[in-house]
Image (cartoon, rainbow, N blue to C red):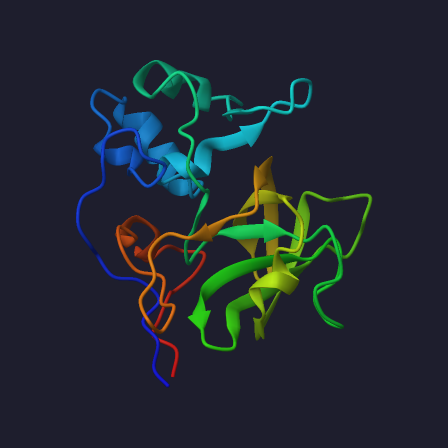
Length: 205
């Protein structure tokens, strides 16, 4: 069965977690470039949890604090969008291979589960460094996200199979942004479908 990972859909309301950051008025060009390089492409990417109040808030690590004056004051009351291209750090053993501390990239959705690729953090004392395995898996959604809260990260290539892990934030369990009868992730996902130096999202056959 062929499965397209992403396709462009209709526009979304301003302030929605699916709104593309590049579509937000008056955001400085240098900040837009930084967001794009670090996979901060929709408002949902900027969500985190306040460690003191446990309420959802915006991720304000430098330089993202500069975008706060351009977006809603509070996080919209809607599910975190699950979109191909995102990276999530496992808090549990999802399968025999995908273990706690591993990182998975969302590659798409199938009738059997979520298509992912695994990264490993080989040295627990260096959580900011990961190694690519380039090995694909399909994992049932419930096994991948069994808890109400989970960990979102940004993964950037350093060289070879070595990657840097940054922008750690705690988010609620995500849900597919848009789905059809075959559970394909569709909708306003072109921001996450753009080619980058770190990945190439393709059609799964």
